[in-house]
Length: 70
Figure 1 (cartoon, helix red, strand yellow):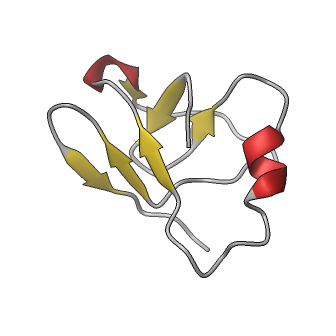
Figure 2 (cartoon, rainbow, N blue to C red):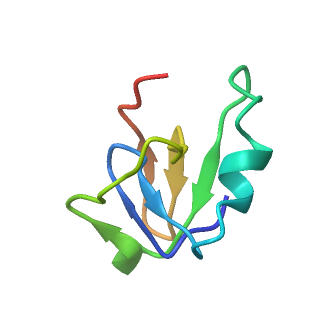
């Protein structure tokens, strides 16, 4: 799942249209993976009720297993 920025809890800011949040809303039994560069990982991302977090973030430097509350 693409994003502009991610935090270590799996929250993300996308491109503002909610496309992936709607598309993946019914896929709770699969892992949601975000691909990012290390500079896109921030301390915290503000979320709204409809925002869907990712389970794992893969960067060029590390793989982050997120602490999501699915």
